[in-house]
Length: 146
Image (tube, rainbow, N blue to C red):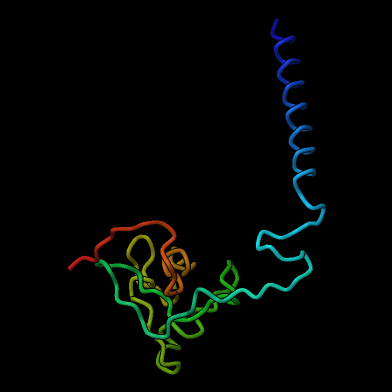
């Protein structure tokens, strides 16, 4: 009984699929078009929507990690290197005119002071993200704290 039901369902699915393909081929002009309505080979210029903001955004709540006011697209941040530290480590920040990392970034998990960035704070983009004046992806009624 179960086998017969399964065969019937598979047959029905195959018929629906074949019928859908036949309908799609008949309704089209036989020419492949993009979703934008042009030919597949046409160049479609896309306007940049997300622009890096040169001014720093304000923080919206206490202890919010600061947003990054520049692109980090080509930055190497992995187990062997962290390009953020070239400017933001306390040894370089003064010469580069960059904000220094918070001293909390130099504490290990037991609260001991370190001379270099703690391993728990090594991957900057876990907390810090580049700021962009971009449209919201979903509706949001968030209100910044006072």
